[in-house]
Image 1: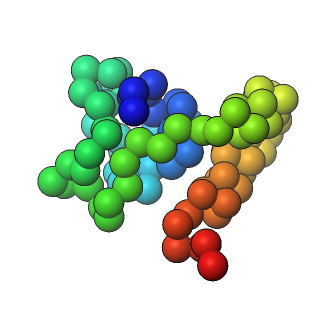
Image 2: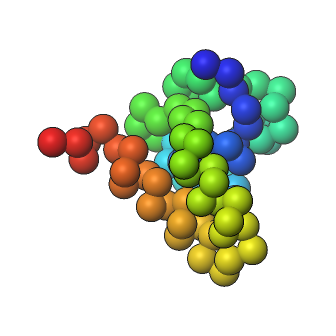
Length: 87
């Protein structure tokens, strides 16, 4: 899998520059692409790593790009992609 940056990850919050793995803020070296997040880091929470959007999700985000609830729309992808939610 290729790392396409935090903005392309279902776990990343654009408005706060945080994610499930880094609730206090994603390290700048990951955000700016100097390092990837394809495997866990020692100081992160849980075992969250880069998870790209599906094509359907990309389309939905493109359509909602200027919506006030953009982060909420992104968050809905988490519940649909969480392996723990799969029965």
